[in-house]
Length: 245
Image (cartoon, rainbow, N blue to C red; front, side):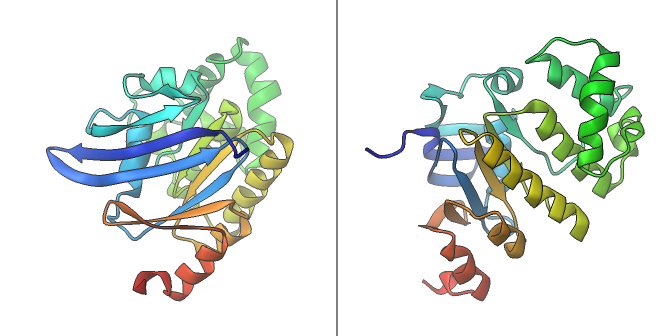
């Protein structure tokens, strides 16, 4: 018997401002799998991420997104988070008067009730250290973070959310070599610790992609899935072989 797929994009067509961006995209992630998604700039990778997160600017005109056989098409972003979905962002949110710490605390509260003092001491501080951040940085607003700090905060958000399914939209972009090493190590560690969890990594860094030991690789080209294969596909993509097929 094959694996039961838990995250499924089924024949998705996605538009923004009446412009078709994604064309008949199907992508499956089974329990415990790590999938890598590759593609050139403008191929539609971020459109998939934002649609999965429930961004209001993107419309599914045909097809569906399923998590544990349940459609996400009408679920709010908060509902999706409660169902165990985490989607990283490439751009820091603009939320006036809200500190990073407050937002992380609200995220944690979706799954477990704890007061802010205990959250900071027991949860936030050790996890911040594990991604190379001083927890004092979380007292800032998102607008006050550097690009590299924001990426590490996104990785910290993933650790705090403890999601069933994590989708990283080029989280490694903007990280230095040490940050990329932390990213790869943490993902590999969490996969071993929680073998039922799913991870999708969207990246341009093919060395990073290879270090993650993907179960399956998808290549997105002009809004369509052009190739599906094993981790060996990363090597072919790296040499440019897949682009000529």
